[in-house]
Length: 202
Image 1 (tube, helix red, strand yellow):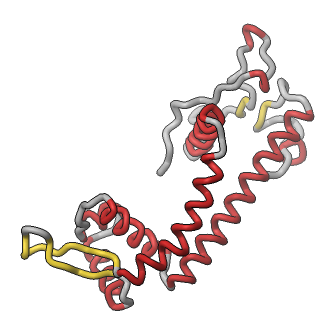
Image 2: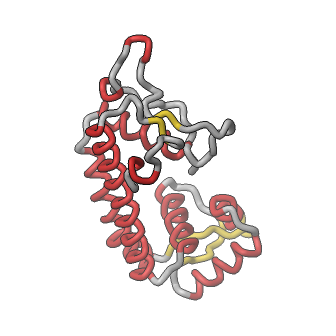
């Protein structure tokens, strides 16, 4: 994130009147760390796809099928199509490709021989466990080291960031410190709460 003092020196977009230079420095540092995480996540995702020789949708499909199997729920092509948000024809092509690559098995659906259940092959399941699985385990461990209150703050912060996908209908500049209690003259950093009502975009 570029310093708003450089890209918006007259505060036309971002209202910084209640923020000190230290506040802005800390916010810029935090957003820079978030950007670094995005870049690292992209690199790790690319490395995982290369390791398993799969594209993004293929990887999403494999993760969905593994999760369904772990939950004891046989997955179907229809359920996969709904999860990926693609057509039945595109799903058929995807499954044909995964089956030819030895990643997915089409098996008779339990109690209904007319339908097919999808299952990840043992080899691909092991590769996913050793690659993507261990990667997610390291990420989970980082989150587990946070206190419950810190996790709530981070979750609220990320949810609020996701909500910025939707533009301000009034086109007004954004008040960075709008959560501060102006009636009590609270300093922006004195607030420990983050809006929790923002919807995620997932």
